[in-house]
Length: 394
Ligand SMILES: Cc1ncc(COP(=O)(O)O)c(CNc2co[nH]c2=O)c1O
Image (cartoon, rainbow, N blue to C red; front, side, top):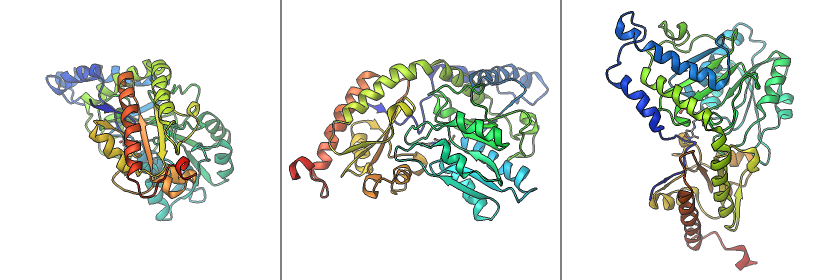
């Protein structure tokens, strides 16, 4: 049996999306910027896909949704665009507030600019639950702050951050607000009539769309300089020939994701909670964050005395795919950054395991994982040189 529980890393393409994309990988190959029939015939499909994205975010046509290659590009566009448009011309106001547990494509972009002396960044730490307190973001703001960038939900823990309160605060203060919503779309409602953001990032492969395509929502009047120049695509705001098949796929995937929010927060949440309750019976485990404050599909569990990689390998041999955290960093055998930020002791930070479900996860799969996970934990602890069951030692 094979069970995929690494959906926060990437998801399988919804079969309906594959079917929708097929024609644009074959007969409909025209460049949409071409003025002949081959180009013109694909345009209605692009417009339909963008319409699905506008509907999913509940935003008006006057706002922009720029299609990018991925969330990494979208996040780079915002941070470097804010620098070039606002900070370069007024270096006095060069402060950016973010969190210490953003995705590396946020953190390393900020490090790149700050290492070159171009911006000043405050990284707000998470609390003991892996959450962010709005008050801590507010207290980090100064009269030099030009941007707050705070993810909607964390990719490692699933913890949902206070985007509504922070966006209201940013608006009151005249500070730009960006949220990386990659781990929120398709899991929790993302209705921008309720959360007033200036910029929002998303990525199709996180909600059963194709890899290598993402988006950046830009509120009317908040346009930034291009990251990529040299083409009239996206109204001249993001150059490069449009990836028609993937845009069509991302549009339908976003529509489907929005349509399954109810299922994610009922059936999928129930399966996640069943898994979490069962794994919590294993002695000396920590599960990060109160489940009601997390996205419905995610749990991050630490098992004292068991290296995350060892558990991963054991599960992998049984056909179960999970991760020790963000795949982007999974090659490094460093401690899980979120566990470190929470203040867990280094030993526990090396034992973190992330399990993330999807709307395609079944009850039989969860039952199989529960059995395999508990047996793997028992086996690995029985051969551990550092772990002794406390009830035996006590
Ligand atoms: C919050 C967040 N932002 C940005 C990205 C980058 O998205 P991409 O550029 O479209 O790939 C990811 C990918 N996160 C993960 C990738 O693998 N494991 C993860 O947790 C993410 O989780």
